[in-house]
Length: 408
Image 1 (cartoon, rainbow, N blue to C red):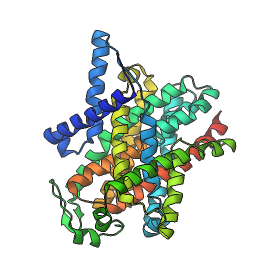
Image 2: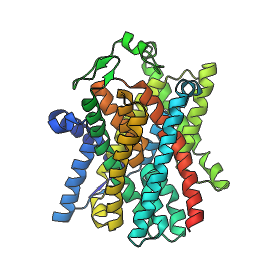
Image 3: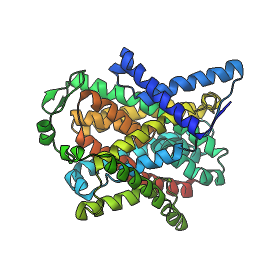
Image 4: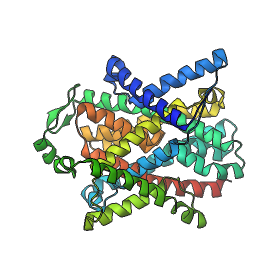
């Protein structure tokens, strides 16, 4: 049996709905704020795996829309790369970037150590660490040919399997960690103790919070025409971005496919901040992007062949487990502590787990799940996307390229 592109897209929608129902009704899932696309995707993925193993009933998926959804989401993030916003949170952004780079180095070192200890080429450890985990599926697929040319057999499968396993773990580990920190330290948002129920933030409370740049007036101006304009804007970001990646390739720099759309969106945003020519609202683009990210994650997990994880080399499984432990410890003792041990730093920690184990989509899903329940965290939503989707990818690409040249 096979699902075409539209049927796979429809299945992802069902996955999200089922995940939302489960998260709402199952106490454990609700208490620890598991993202609904991850839970629904895992449930269906397990079902399809069981049908294949027990009855030989195999389902093939057309993932045509998966990559465009991912790129569209990152385009919406790119629009958040405002120089004005960066100036507002500059010191915190730079400090979080520094912590992330330190951890990225540790992640790579652990990956190389695992590979060497298990008799694999040392560069395989890079593939199973920063490429697949901090980089995610896009980076894995972008760099796979370079690893294969340097002797790593089936680098695409190895990297993608690790990346998808990382996405799964990033979604499962991030929100429980932040929930634990919020409850343990009785953290506050907007001067109030965070309770385990939905929090309503008033206009006054929002205006009193730092780093809030969006407002109610923008939402009040929403109309079908503005929605269409923003959808068309994202489509243009995605299309124009395809002309940027080849430019980097010509100078020997390989970057994930979504970087081009992010650069275009960032340029448009900073022009718009000064001129208002485009009159695009970050909040509207963010909503569109968040929808894309939910469908992307649901599709990525539901189409995951768990047989690949079962049949993967032992080093991949060991790497996922040890890197998962490492990233939780890093979030707990490095990020949460040095970012201030506040409610915002707990939310940032959940995002850190998300993008260091999977993608920035994971990070935003983790943080959105938490803030919907506990209250807004504008500083976290400024810092994590800037670092996780903009800066860390460029730095990671530099690390990977340098290490490939050194260790090949």
